[in-house]
Image (cartoon, rainbow, N blue to C red; front, side, top):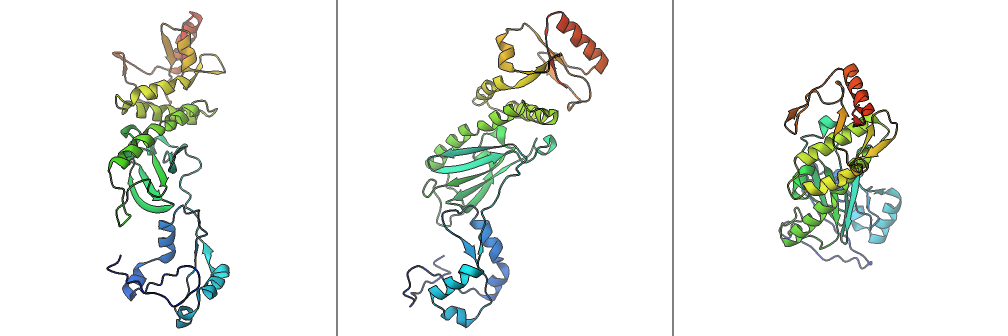
Length: 301
């Protein structure tokens, strides 16, 4: 900046700081000032930030700070913090001693989540620094999440241009801490399996399966532990039971009623056996017979 902006001392003795930057014509045409302010000052809440645009006049330049502030008190518009995620998507907050933020799924539709590469906005005291791939902050099995992290001053190391995070030991420590706290996203998905809406339960189940599939040996056990709260409906029962409750009964085998026409068109190999769809009547007959025989049955419909 020092090569482009040469500071000059003002004769105005009023308390405070005014910065006047004279831009050439090309620069004025390239900058959309309102968009620029909202882009960079995304979550600034510790100051009353306002924006005022005035047609150029030597009169304004000659005004004192007090006179300009008097005009701005009635003419300037507040710069509102950016509202990030869609309220209808699954989200979870993360926070530490020197940062706050949250992560969310980009959509409530499976086809818009699976395979999606998310991004995380990094802010410093509410000011935009950079946007990075989610995998720079979260494990690969959560690559489909979007997010924002607002760090306090000096919580991360920034270069002079303040346009990226330097990936040093400070970054690696913070990244590990945030990655561990991101497991709360798995908890939120598990909670969603208790929803009274079948579509939301299906969505959560498929995303959980996708996350577990791509979890490393380090993360997979932590996901499995959380799946104990995953709920399913027993055959011919209105209430839903958690996987933890079912395991507590020590069943020898668990049968799943999975009629054709819900989400999956192709079933996979499980324990070396190919799973197939069967017609609804036959599936229901088999489920009734197995339940009557004392077997544990789970309805997937």
